[in-house]
Each structure stands twice: as structure tokens, then as C-alpha cells.
Image 1 (cartoon, rainbow, N blue to C red):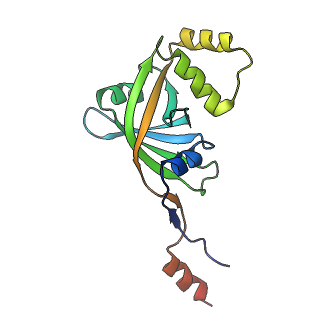
Image 2 (image 1 turned 180 degrees about the horizontal axis):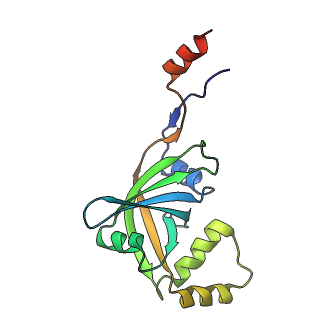
Image 3 (image 1 turned 180 degrees about the vertical axis):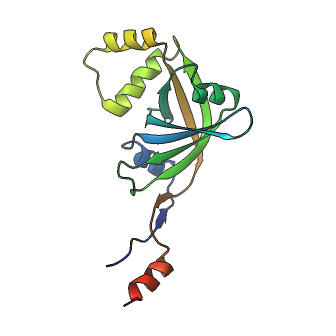
Length: 160
């Protein structure tokens, strides 16, 4: 049986955003006060301005960390564990209510489409005191898939 070979594909910003848009499983990496990473599994999307957006609460570590140090990284995963992924580095902006309200509507739309009752959704976001983190992509790695290096796969496949 042929082995899965790891791949990397370099893309421009448009290609990156096309890759990220349908994928909503992310790992958001912020920096703790002691300089160590804080990794948060989150749902996210891409807004109309090409920023990666994540809903949160003001007291969560990711929000506090991003406000203190806006340099963040996002690992965008595919639904399948062994599907393609990409790391995006960028600058975060944290919005709190009431400034976050319209941005949270955009966040919902880019992940789930239209809400049946936007007034109800807005009221829920206000009641919950939700916040939004927007990450402007500044650099990113290639789109990657896991697997063996090509030379290792060839050696393994050549084995009887």
C-alpha cells in the first residue's frame, strides 16, 4: 500500500482566506504574562475584511492575553484530523460590547449563515456580554498535510 506523503502548498492571501473560510476548527495561541503560550481551541471564521474572527468573553485568558500582547497565532485545522492545516500569525484586536455587537453578527454569518432572528441574537450577545477577537493575517505558513517525507515513503514502499 502506498504511503501518505506530506505536502506543503504556498498560497497568497486570497488563497489563504479561501482555505480558511470553510474551516471553523482553530487553535488560537496567545501569550501569557510569563511569556509562555496559551492555546485555546475555538470556533472561528473569516470576516468580510479578511480577518480571522473568534467569539469569546472579556474575562477569558485569550481575550486578556490578546489585549496585552496582540501578537497571536492561529492554527486552522480541517474537520478530519489528518486533513490539511495552516498556521497564521497576525495582530489581534479585541472588541467588547457594545462595540462588538455588529462584529458578532458578522462572525455568526461567516460561520453559520443567516440567523432566524437577528434581534434575538443581538439581545443574547448583549446579555452574555460577548467579545470578539479579530486577527489580521500578517504571515502564514504553507497549507500542509501530514504524512511521510517522500523519500521515506519510497523506501517503505520498496520493502517486501
